[in-house]
Length: 298
Image 1 (spheres, rainbow, N blue to C red):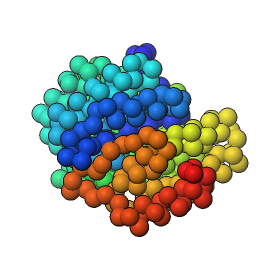
Image 2: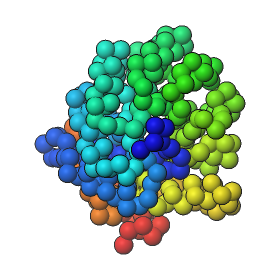
Image 3: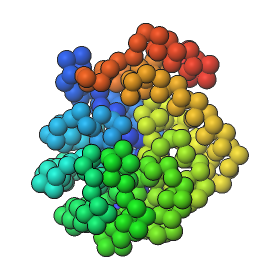
Image 4: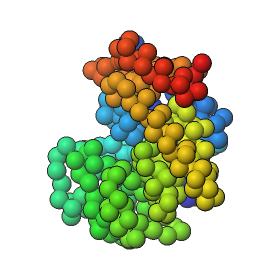
């Protein structure tokens, strides 16, 4: 891959497959990568919050990422998310990601414990300066630590290797201000939720880190490809369809619906890791019915 790989278009946030006993199913994970390569997505993202990364310990986050890098074999760039609550743990994960051969890393705020904006910026600055890899920043309100547009602007200005932004605030004042502060040809501004991709791309974003594409990559590619050529009516229609798919997949607890649907279309992604719950039979029936109405399963 190039020193600064591109993740424009569709980058898939990979789901973590587990066996019934709670262990990671690396064979299914490698199969998930093959499905994404075959579909023609533009990149792979490991250890996002939606991938059950908080159910993994640090060694498992590294092991799943190494599996993805090996399975991708340079055919797609891999960005690995740094999920850690301390500087020491984050540095250890960074070193292991580097050794695994990832193409880029994504920096995420520590979670639960609140940080001031100066403390958050100092943490992110330190990590960005601790690696020569291209870096992204995942602005995830789920952590409890959302970086302000001004903090994001300073992070990018102070660190030339920070070149990707994963937007998950769903706050359009925040989005527009952040775009003004960091937008430009050197930065890839990527949406972080399938619900608002066309809106963000219409404002100047270059794509999405998508969870739906883990199950239905072609549907998300249809949206981004239309937006990239300015076919906005087509892109809005694709967005409306994705909202219906998203509503179906979010039936039930956390990502259980995504895993169930993936099995329906021939790419099994295993079980949830306890204590995260599986679908009830009624929820599974609802998802299957909704996807059948959309023409996505037979």
